Length: 213
Image (cartoon, rainbow, N blue to C red; front, side):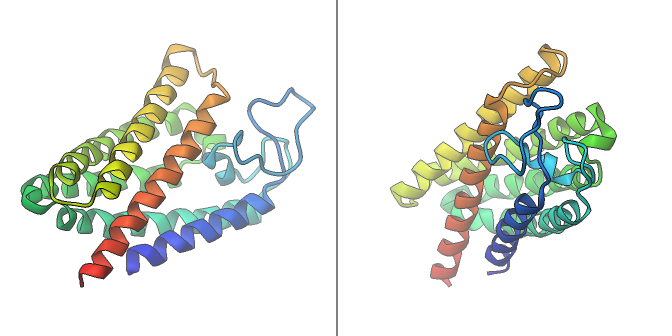
């Protein structure tokens, strides 16, 4: 229940932050920035900016998104504590997933404290560093959930979430390190799709836990 409440708070606060975002994406021509937030072309990290990409101040929106990050970080903590219970006979694998998942939260805390507009490539490095243990935890969790007696919809959702997350991560690494910081418009789209799958996956496991109790 705590995990689901944290997830709901993250969604509500992020939506509020998007409404307050002044405008601009990394893909707009200089001086021709769009107004407001673009769901598919703005990165989630753009909401952290105290000054939006179009140069306008974003104090309220950035503070609200900081609260959203706190909510989802707490939610992730509950999530990784709950994951082994969804892995049946693979509970030992679940314990390893739990440890790696909790380690990844440390990196996400650093990410929340290092907005892209102030920390540049250090922000990108923290994303990659924290994604490593997080993706490893997700792989272990996926093996356990798919290999256990869980219902087929959860197995399909788990596989889809892992695939979307891996694709988004690889695309990010490719854009940042291989092309000198040039991002593709496909990257924020992949990020949003992966985030949606992760939120649905978390919610599904949380609801399963409630039903089992």
